[in-house]
Image 1 (cartoon, rainbow, N blue to C red):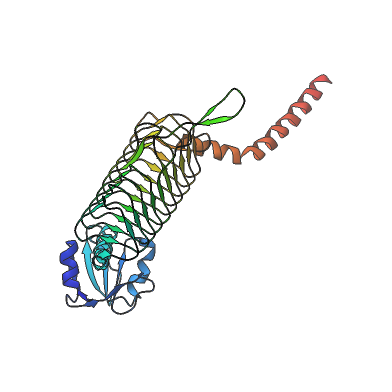
Image 2 (image 1 turned 90 degrees about the horizontal axis):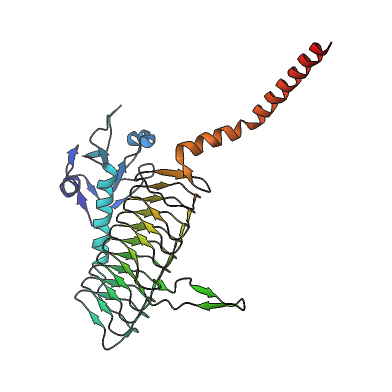
Length: 349
């Protein structure tokens, strides 16, 4: 499938600089691209490749200044990275449109309902009263439990497990191996020292336009719902505990863990391997650095924290700088002590 520079520019609202009839058939990184491929330049540190790449077409920012002539046709866009992402999304959509129909063998309960233009891969399981919206795609080996609802154009990748009663919105992507709706971690200590399991009778609600990475776990609520709100983007290998709420457009990087009943605000950024205790609140726009341990609520919006226990980001960096200087400080203190001893000895004489 070929596209001209003019067609691509029209799709992303860009402006062609060079040959509008230049054709591309695939994508490539700017440092490796060859003739017939489309690349982009958004990071200034890769600018030198702009003059040596073999790519036929390159998307650049409107503000990009040329230091020397460029062989490729340029498409100038307000944001080259976002424009390239739009193209990749359209390309992926074109490929997925080819997937429709129900492969065999599958198990689909008689009460399950599937919409138009759905794809259900081999060895998938759809339980009682499952509803699959128009254009949704369920890849091979997925398990969809009783009374689960999957919204229009959502994609459930191979090996995903969605337990009973959970709801998935529109345009959601859940990657391979993720488990939605397993029991929350609830056990009541008994007088004899044993632990009695607390039944987890809630569910998980995933709102529209959410993406969840591979091998993540989102536990069902004890009562009520664990909620991932619209636009949230969750990385691989996450643990989201029972009754957690993750706000709109919040992003969480790999290996982070959020304990039960914590409420994460909108547009929060959580770095990899961060840990957040239960029953606290994280204000809108908060930024939690990688490997931070958050043990109390962040109440002021747009606060940045780091460390364990997490503290104000700037203050923590100052503390780290002081810690690095401790050996020098110790040396200076010893020198001062020796000077004081010498002065004291002189005065005694």
